[in-house]
Image (cartoon, rainbow, N blue to C red; front, side):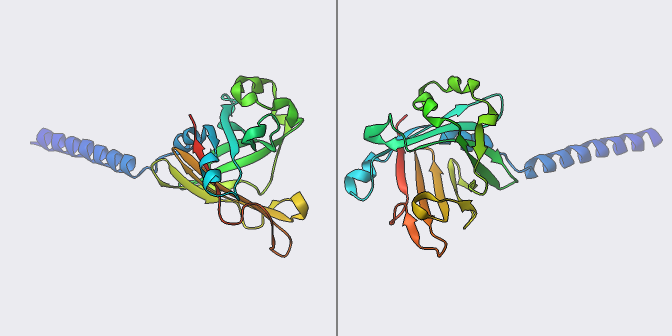
Length: 210
């Protein structure tokens, strides 16, 4: 009888542990960092939006992974579609998970960025670029939340990203990321909160080309 009771105790303990393990696994918060990083990658343009609204330009946007052994980094290049050999913005984005619900896209400027024009076509070229040759734009990271499968949305802090472009005091970015497009609204404001630069009606709609 004692042996029978002992067997029942061991069996009960076994199933209790299994139930506990299942509960822990089911309540574990999923990590969607790879999903976000993957859907950001590719080439885009805003041609469709520019055709229906002349206040928007046809802008090209290229985002491709670099430094694969260092983390989730993207080289980002933007230009008027007709002048892609003369981009107006070249950046490196670092995509990380901050906590169970928030992801960050931090922004870095590149030293001698003209040397890297068009290198999105050969991202392995960035293996020769040192982390010491880039500078983080403090306060300019976009904080993103996952709304659905392959759908993230976020923005910068209200006045955290300093900018002196065209006499502005700070800049803001609002971003929505889908599997087939990115909507990005970048604006600059003076110290009184007056709009200085950037689209007035809403964000640029970049449709993915590949």
